[in-house]
Length: 116
Image (cartoon, rainbow, N blue to C red; front, side, top):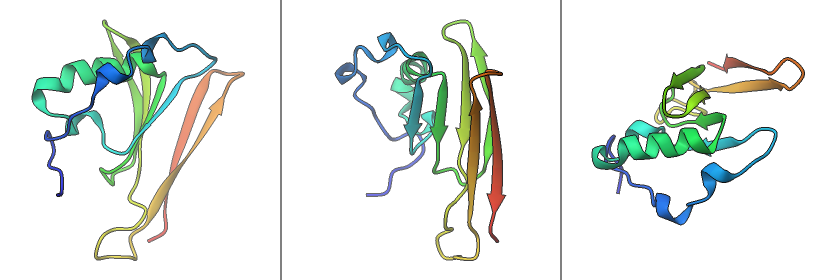
């Protein structure tokens, strides 16, 4: 079955202590970005993701992007959205991101590369 945007679910209850994890930096990797989650669960899932990590890497959208979200519920979360590694039906379109985390400057720098 091929999933549709807004059709996926995630069992947040099996990860109740995710937001309590501590460390110098918490990074979350997800294939699908949050807007793929079903509408009835989206806001809860988005809050869950932003509470669990300072940086969230996602893919699937095939359009590279990076930035930050700041909201009153969870503070600041950085995000990096991946390029398409190999476009279905067009193997000449290929790209990837490289991210550099600088702990001294407390920065994240992401560069997108295209091989097409």
